Length: 546
Image (tube, rainbow, N blue to C red; front, side, top):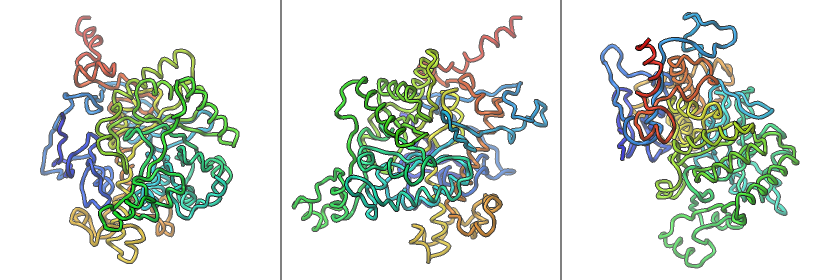
C-alpha cells in the first residue's frame, strides 16, 4: 500500500490524518484551519505552484510514481520542439508561444455547446447540510470562474419549506435559491445542472424546473457515483425531521416511528437517523431492459422540453460502463460523467467507500477503450466528464489526455468545496455578527491565515481581480468563498497552462495519450500507455541509427 506523505515542506502544506492520492485529507473538515494544498491555494492561487521561500531554498521531487496503479503512476511528457494548436491570431514565434497563451477553455454538448473557462465542473452538491450551508460561495465562485456546477439529488425532498401536492412539486424555495444564485452571476461560461434520482423523478423535479427555468438548466439522470453503490444518504439529528423525511417517501434508518427508536433517542443513546434514497432499476433484469427504460426516460424529458440532458454513473463494472456509453450515445446526450472509486462524498458508509467499485484509473482506461469501439463503428461518442479523486492541475492534464479526444471536462467533488469553507470561515472570523449566517467556524483568524494579512484583500490574492470583474459596488455582495474559489481556479488554470506549454499543446483539443507515460509496467499494461522508457523509443533509435 502506498503511504501518501502528510506534509510537503516545499509548499508548506500539511494533511490531517491520512492523505489521499488527490492531496486532500481523507476527512475534509469545513472548520479546518489549514493547510492542505487545496486549502492554501484557496488563499494564494497560483502562488501554490511554486516552492516557498524563494531565494533561501532549493527543492527536489519526492517521487512516488513508480509504485502501484493509479493516476499518480502516469507521468506527463515534455517535448524539445514544436507547437500544436496555436490559438487564432497567434503564431509559432517564441514571443507568442508562452504558457499564458495556452487556451484551457473547454466546450461540451451535442447541439447547444456549453463553454467553460477551464475544463472543470463540480460534483453533485445535493441534500447534505454542507452543500446547503456553503452554496453561495460554491455557486457564485463557479459562475465568476466560468465552470459548471451541479445541484445534486434530493434537494426538494429534504426541504421543509417545499410543497408537494398530489405527487408533484408546487413550491421549492431551496432549489430555486441555488439556481438563482448561480444565474445572477452567470455570464455565458459554465452551466447549472440539476440531478435527479428515483424520489426526485417521482416528485416531479423535472416538470417543475422546465416550467420555471426552461432550458437554462441541464437535467442530469443519476445511475450512481464513485463513493457508494446505494442511493444517497444524509444524517439527521431530529426525530421530528426524521419522521418528516419518512412522510416524503424516503427510507429512514432506524424507523423514527418505532417506539424503541423514539425511546432510545429520548434517552440520548440514539443520536442520529440516516435518510436513504432508493436503488434504481431494481425491476430490470437485463441490459436490454435497462436500455428500454433509459430511452423512455430520455424521451419523457425531451417531451417536457429539455434540450440538454446528461447522465452520471458510478464505479460499477465493465457491463454498466458499456451500457452508460452506448445508451448515452444512442440517446444523443450532452454529457456522460463517469465517476471512479477513490473519490469522496458528504456521507457514505466508510467501508463501502474503501472496498467497492472500480478505481478511477482502470475505469477511465476502459472508458477510452470502449469509446473508441463506438467511434470506430461510426457512433458519436457522448462528450465525457471524468470524476474520482481529482484536485490538482496535473490530474486535469492526465485524465483529459488519457481519454482524449472523448473526455472534455473533469468533474471535481470535494476539492472545489474547500474554498467555500475557507471563505465563510474568514468572513465569520472578521465579522462575528454574520458568523452564524455565513456558517463560519472560526472565532478568530488562525495563524495560518494571519501570515498573509488581516483583511480579505490582503489574505485572498485574487481579491482585486474579482473586484475588477464585478465592480466595486457589487463586490460587497460577493461571498469570500467565491473569491477563494477564484484563487483555486487560478492555480488550476495556470498550472494546466504550464503543463500544456511544456507538452507543446496550446489547446485542450490537442492533448492525446502520447502526452503521457506510464511510470511502471503494471500501469502500462492496465492503461495501454507506453512505459516511460518505451515511449518514443522507436523515434530515438531511428535518430541514433541513421
